Length: 357
Image 1 (cartoon, rainbow, N blue to C red):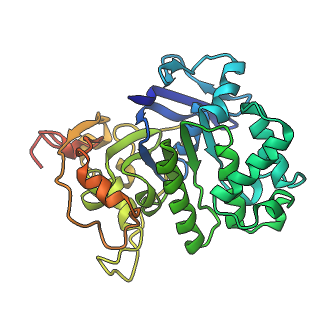
Image 2 (image 1 turned 135 degrees about the vertical axis):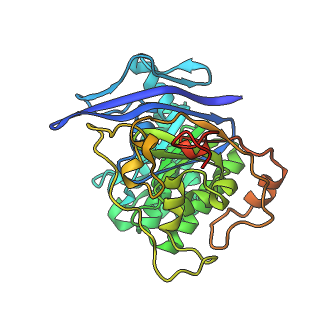
């Protein structure tokens, strides 16, 4: 069953330079209990998608355009009353925001911030809410949770603050957890711990997870399926293993080539040239063509649709150096291959210039 179904999502934000079409026709589906990674560079529209789902686009200036649809458990959220959206936030869909160093209120103790979320979504007394807040802190791996309840955010390390943010997000017992760059500003060891924690909680609670990151390595540790976003468009969809092993879009390949790989043992990284184009002036044709190493004539004038790609056979082992979760390997082997799609003329039958490439 589809828990979240996004169709033709077009979100814009008014800026001093004009209206930025941050999302331009995005489709995304998340099933009950599924873990999905959303990957792309800064400026691709990842955070705007999360804020659109929760009805938290900046005001004034943030708009979800007509014809967009966001359905949660079959209920349309676009245009829903504010009271209904507030009930969904935290209760049905919860979010872990970027920057654990600054996401918590610095003048309130950690316990009071978690209790506020508990009292908003669950029928608990203040005493029961404090006890539940301590239990949540214990669930996310914070030692001495009673001490943490009475601590201010600045008294906790970055990793502990991120765990406290996760505990707050779990307070309303959501069905879908959106984690937006949850490992930002954390050291590598703490990143791994936070990712494993998210995966363990997701599997233990049976909830769905949407993990947002610019780094494919991050989502590979916790997710089974990946959606690659570029310039407000979905440009590749597939299983995590398939995309890591054999990306279909040059941009997906570029993201992988710009990270360290133990398999290739390269001494230097290969960056993607240029930068994400300005959302107020998307280029014509394929939006990646100004940066694409395989660009051809058709790419500059015609925007490709999402082509159906091949279902790649599951490899015996993941790419060396890819951070695959402890239980992900067994789960992926028994699962049906995820359908693959890519927005690239190279995937069409006649290639980018009308000839077989």
